[in-house]
Image (cartoon, rainbow, N blue to C red; front, side):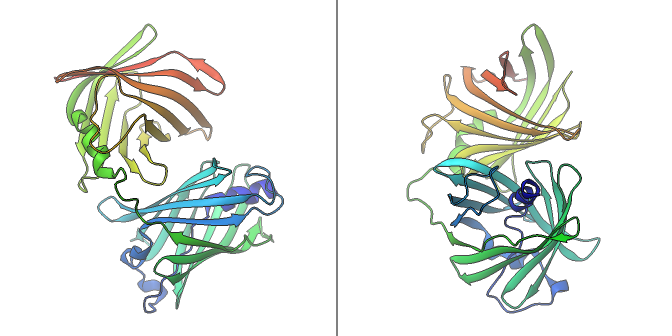
Length: 342
């Protein structure tokens, strides 16, 4: 049971929200009412007993959250990261948006453990509440209500309560206080990463080489409407067609890629570019640490680590190589991607 509760705790961490603005009827909630949450937040809590998957009981957990507008401000996306002793213990992604079918402000979640669920927001004064239901791996069903209360413009508290597992009540999660993080003066921004990747904009002939296998197709890189990230389409024979959104994640300090493919798989990847700084330009020889997690259509989750490098860069031809590839404890052959202007 404790393992399953942990899955829900990670998946539904930041589910409920609160605002100090004037009260509104639950059915009248709009996405713009949550604008106060946009930004970076950090908090700490002590890990309770019974959750060895997350870390030793009594450990201090540092919680980092990044809330951003996405898809032409039709949704809010949350990217979160928990750390113990400076090491990542869990990450998560969630989405909030208005559901025209129900007329409610809804919450959707797909977790790294394979769990998934939905919820509906309501509000009573300064307290925002999300009543949710979720399915965890193994078939267990969970439900609960998440509260989040705004203390001031830079502080809020969060707690998950009234939790049930297959209809049986289980303990509430500890209350956590989070503080808004202030931007670091002179730090790298999303604009710096956009400038770094601008050589990739446009249409390309794409070739993928893995060992003796060579496959051909096309790729298109476009700057998103908000001019803070990229939209990428890749279609190569022998591979599922994919669409990706790529941009800078200030919580992790890495370039982040979210991908969906035609087989129903979902991927989250990060690129930590060596020596990244303001004004840095993409050039031949740049190198970075690539980490990815793929949530496949059959329910399996695959984690991989690789080294990405640019081995050739010209006006009409770019070559990238993913080397030192490790997946499920095995070493894989290099993966080479060549872009050429049509």
